[in-house]
Image (cartoon, rainbow, N blue to C red):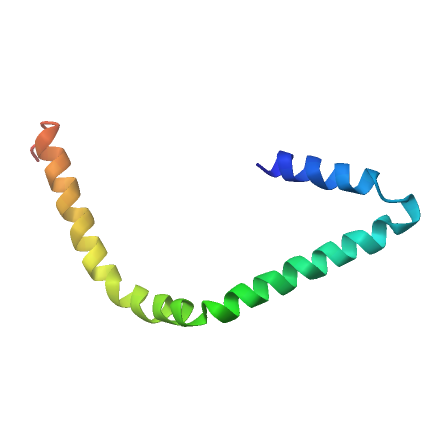
Length: 80
């Protein structure tokens, strides 16, 4: 996927004169950062919920993982 993005970027730069490559690269970088900040702003509440609830869910996830491991051991015949 990154190779495809790099190919598109290189193709786009071939259409721009050499003296403007730096300016175009900086503009693309600024637009990417701006887009990322906008996404973070809109989805901020979900990031807060994730940060607040994830530590509380670790014991539950450990319990689920232990249960899955017990079931897998039983299914694959490793009764220890």
